[in-house]
Length: 91
Image (cartoon, rainbow, N blue to C red):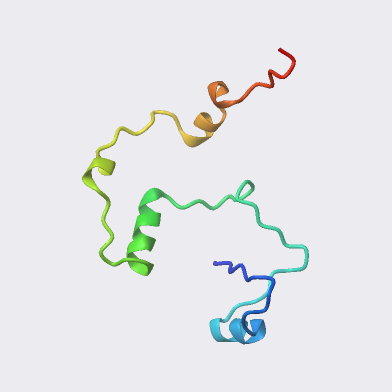
């Protein structure tokens, strides 16, 4: 399932686009937010998509592949208290 975000200025005929690519409009009021998204791609999936659709010669530099990865998961890192800025305007 893929979503295409079209610009609000009509650069092309949307109905023709939908017909050509077999698309359908989202329901009125539909909203997308990455903060509430439950479908996430892995790093490997992203690399495969880049190679398949963007650059067939895409490779990951060796230093990136051997880089030490954090022991904590993304959710834990994002919730880490040391990353939260405190409001110190009254000090």
